[in-house]
Length: 307
Image (cartoon, rainbow, N blue to C red):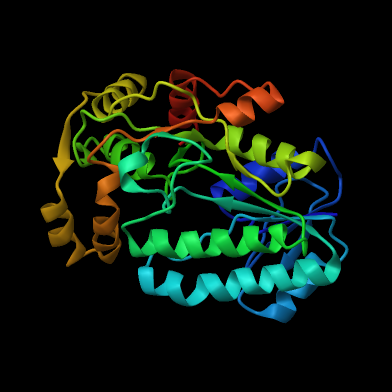
């Protein structure tokens, strides 16, 4: 049995599709799980409840954590430590391997142009500090020999059916679909990597089913030479048959928007990821698994088509 905790999101769905290559025994766990594959085993659980997590991972050989908590700093500070504590406890009790799907919030803001698995951990944001603490806790357990675990790390992501979960969809594709201007946080002159969700799902499944991949951090396959914000907007506009009209959203405007839309206020501390080049390097994974990431233009075409 291979189990996905937080199976309802964009990454969880792609991972469930990809795991079919490795097992017919796939368990999807969330508050209201829905089947991705006909034979999926569904378990409803609150991952903040230890007994629920124990029940969810029973008989599992590999457990994947693709959970997405509400995008709120205080929620993250309160709930992430509880969640990861529950998962680690349950996985150790049931002798499960653990694959933790992570982002890059913990990286030093001065090292975002060419991020690798060795990029310094020194986030200026509160959310990044939470992610750094959680990642350290996961790898400390591995280094102490208490559990086999790995971290699969993604850049910002995009892909089919990410309408409500991808910054690229929220800020560009969704407005264009309503004949409105696109929005871009920060300046459009900077490069910005995005990981294609089907690639992320396939790669996470590969890592989970490769014994010597454990007790390491891996960057998930992401196409090199990313587009600038302007190029992203123009490419998406061409695919959607619309004009590439857009506005650049400053930190000041984000703060004002945050008065009416709290999630925009939460993005303010992450603004540094959009006022400089944000380039994600996944050569470690690509070379180890002979994997070529989906080219950006192909990914854009597939993403627009599926919205």
